[in-house]
Image (tube, rainbow, N blue to C red; front, side, top):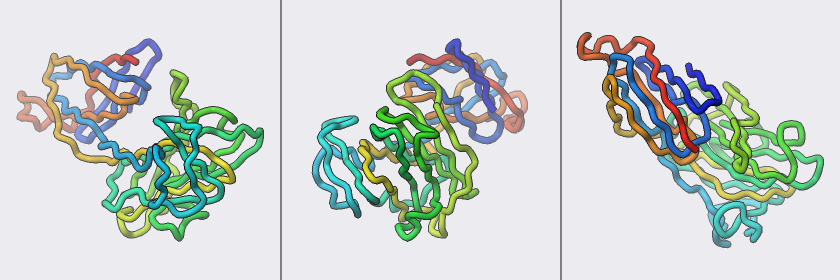
Amino acid sequence: MTDLNKTGTFAATTDGNYNTIPYYRAKSFRVTNFTGKVVGIRQRHHAEIVDNFNDTNFSEWTGDIAYESSELEGSGAARVRGTAYRTLTNQVMLDGSEVEFFILMPITSTYSFKIGVYDDPSRIGMDGAGFITLNESNSKSNTKLKVTIRLRPSVSKFDVFLENPDIAMDRIHQVVDADGVFGANNMDNSIVAIEAPNLVIDPIIYRKKVNHTVEHIGHGGSYTYPCENNTSEYEIINLGSDAMNYSDNTQTISISGFYAR
């Protein structure tokens, strides 16, 4: 779908369906449309803080979790010893919603813990809607790690991306098109869960997929857009051309762009 090189430029391909701008860590990007079609662009998510752990109130949590003064972000963090979980959302979850966990990896050379999203607490310890087990084979001890779980309930699939937030680089590990268990309630009472003998975490963010208003980029248009962390926070679609009465919106087109950190 996309082609990205390391010189600061990218090409993003789309058709009559929404496709994401290619992932690259950036604070802004510029896109130019020379396709002869009208391109629609919109943000993909609405960010909601699940917990920033800046206080000692853990009333929404169940399990062994407590305030930790050695923060990762903000003024505090949380330490999990065992299993802890809390509500993620009580609304229907759309495809492309993401949950971000920021964690401090253990200092020990060998470790294993699980982070996941589940449709119900009864599934903790089993396969969930999206999950990953982290150990020394897929991560590095004593480092910060950002875990992103992207959920696609309509097809019972999920993706997981790992990043070091302090290093300007691509995602260091990913699991794509894994099978998840989403239950029968559209994830409208879903939870986040951490299963770890000893782990510091801060914060947890839910990037809820929403259908934002579409901005139009006409042929020859070139615009700059801000992004919080990466370019794939946006998605584009071919809206067709006036010459064909916009009926050519199913054709595959490509726009070019460049990003800035």
